[in-house]
Length: 187
Image 1 (cartoon, helix red, strand yellow):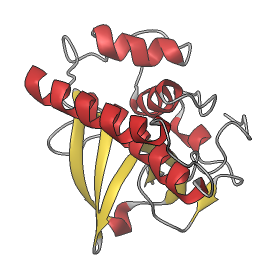
Image 2 (cartoon, one colour):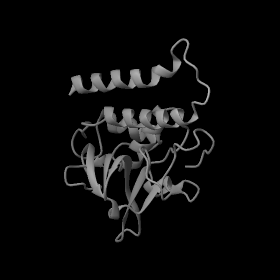
Image 3 (cartoon, one colour):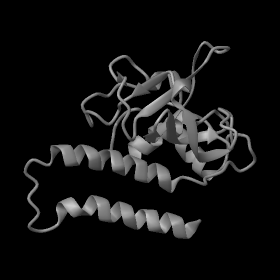
Image 4 (tube, helix red, strand yellow):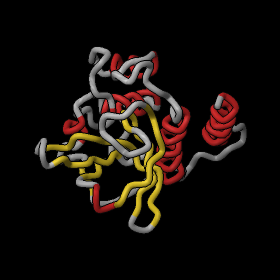
């Protein structure tokens, strides 16, 4: 597990440091910058794969860090806090909320699907978005995601950070928080 995280860290460093090499021409780098921002978000999220709660009650050192980032106490659901924490680690001021519906304001919603998009799953019995995570990639009618507070079965009350395969039709909303880095401070 530690070897995988070290390898992913090296890949992240290589990916993001290539634009700052001496003699590198950064003119017309906007499309590459957008790709690099999304890759950085996913790299941070991938480094958290394997994080598990300490006792299965929304606790543990890493879970506490995600919740603390959003100002919420340990023991609270943390899927949105995880997403917010990932964006914060990448230098984005927003989102910064542990409330999953708050990650889908109209100004951020999109029909497009790209890496590092935030996805939301609607739960009819709660009448709201009640679970969210990050899109890693799309494979046909399926999404490969990275999400916190889930488990192998895909529950919204899970025990860790997992990579999941979810049917596209199960997703209610997508939000693009990476589109305008730092330009919108909505929560």
